[in-house]
Image (cartoon, rainbow, N blue to C red; front, side, top):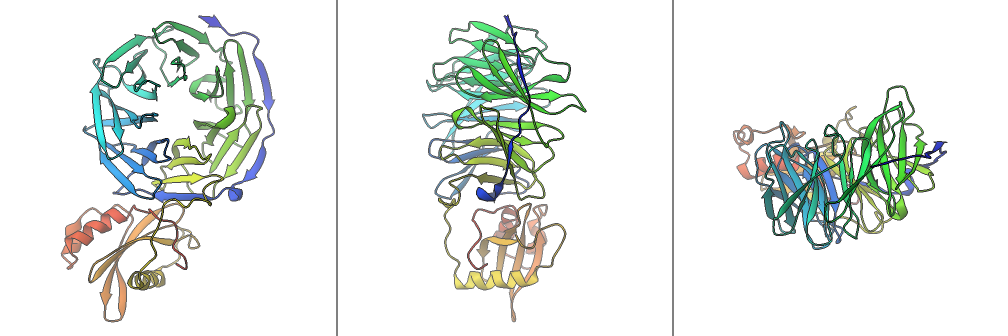
Length: 442
């Protein structure tokens, strides 16, 4: 164990406040009622993987614009974290959140092929996960003071960690050479491939109640978010082994950063609690803030892709979002033009819209259509929410019959009105689907 000394403290870094208008923002809502996105990861092909925050489904938004949703076996287990690997696997942790008694590690491949392995102990409460260079993965056992390694064949080894057994295991990461780094409440543990551990204690000032999470900031260096006591300025830290800690006070954030994601060149992305802001901090400490054009913003997952764009899971509006330098150059996903009949339906739908405080009329748009002989579903959204309108063909053209925001769950209520079962089911699905960018002239 090594106690850190000689801490370098830096006060407020005057970050350059930048408008998001320089980086286009696009959001995509998710299928099925109340599919709230949580963990998110991007693979080498820039396909985006995400998990339902409170269920057993994993989604894949491919770079070609197609969306696929895969059920994961389980009942009350919750997917806590995702990690992509160079061999095409997407690893995930699954745990019973009530008591942590059921824990599995699994991986999914494109096409939805899932392999699951159960951990031997009931107190594991799996949390974070990181893939290694040999086809396996490391996972943290949040409240059990252990980490575990699982190889591609399912062989599991568990390692106890040094330090007080009451400390939670919050984050885990793997260097290219196989070195494992584990974050505890007030320390980082260096774990070799043989299981030998070295613990670096991070002394906490009185204003800080503990470390929350970490992401790499370069070789042997880490960005950390911390729990700051009420009334104190929020901070983000950069720790470099073995004995240097730099503290940065953050501007314009009442509650401090919540989610971290590693960026290029040792930078990090972070979200601010209680504000529609994503910020980027460089190793120099310079901070750039991007104010997002949303009325509601609640990030539960965030990751940077190989193009330099940042993907995030906006749980508030049940959407995936992306912004960055490549968004406007590479449309994602690909869309087909509307047929004449579909354009007629959308125009009829537009005439029925009534301004409401619950959505921004300037941003309301039709995003998907499902057409039957006498009925059509128009899935629509603004930047904060999504809904669907059921249209019916009548003598004077198409007219609205029913509107849902995703909480309607009785197809038989519509079939009693003569709506075919297939399209009433589609209404439920499309009420939370926004898979295409705005159509021209709509």
